[in-house]
Length: 375
Image (cartoon, rainbow, N blue to C red):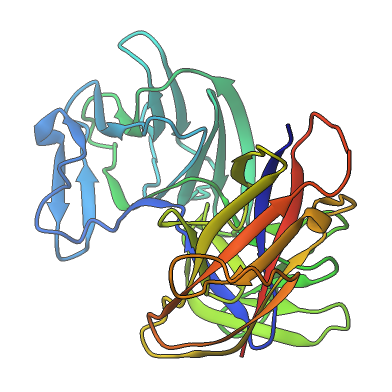
């Protein structure tokens, strides 16, 4: 029997950009009353929090002084960015990022005395599976330095070698840990363009949805980056703008309505397929709920329909109908349904039927799209 999947696509009038997921794991500006409990300070007396300057100051009190935290589990990609005030002026004074597996295995990305006194004020370590890539930035963009593999268990900053009169402290201004260096804007029609702009509206990056793709990725200049997101159609008409606000790597934004479709009390995915199950007796018939999560604004003139997914024909097998008020379908199935209006936090039940309409045989799932428009 055929198994089917559902992907929801939200495109319509007065739609806009909204945030679906955050890529932020933590952002520490060292402005609390004490160092966060997530950190391992080694040795403990090497670090002092300066609340006036919002800095964590690391001193050369041991062969190496470290501010570490656990590498998050089950995260295939990570981006760690450090902002520091550190300009070593003597040989042997070294500090920077460390990826720590155990007492014998580690990766170190260190800054040392530079005859030109060029300060790299930001360091970055990016993880993909067990491969770590290191970058530095002195205000002119990110420079790629090295890449290596290790099963890191802890990560953070290390300051090497014991005290010398010429050695300087490493002052940490900010730790930021995200799931990526990029943001994703999804649910875009082909040919739509997304611009990442600075707070003044100047474009710093852009990408256009390619054929057979439903979104774009944009590299962030910094973590976080304070900016504006703008969506334009194929003719260059501005459709939506969001910001300015802080964007973190790994954030996912969607272009569409914030109306939600719930099945078994869980929202249908907007970025992946929703598996509806295996078809028995040539039919699947299930109730779903259209929900307006907005607490202040009603959704009016709602229309819902079944659309084609790429070049597949699964949409021909799917129809929807209203609930008859007794938790049963009213049996008047159509490919597009007038859903009326939904008050803030309101919901309405509808039914979906997927029915075999030919003797098609295949081993791949059949896909179709649920399309929602409203004002």
